[in-house]
Length: 91
Image (cartoon, rainbow, N blue to C red; front, side):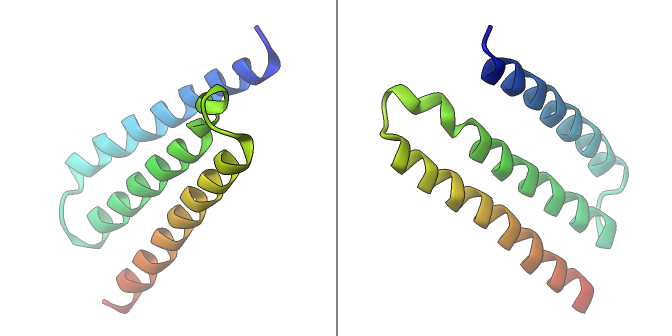
């Protein structure tokens, strides 16, 4: 196993733990500002997950395009979190 594979497995476990914990919290705290913040976190984590695992397609797609896609997903995740956080703070 390469170092990159070990890192991808480790981050996959972390992402799954985060998604599992926040999914349980989403069920418990449905509605209101807390529910909205939990949804923001879940969507952000999912977008960051996709950004990290775009590297799987490195044999099919040139690395320059993969880096661009990764940057777009990370920017989308942080932009979504910032915009959603601002909307929650205003309400």
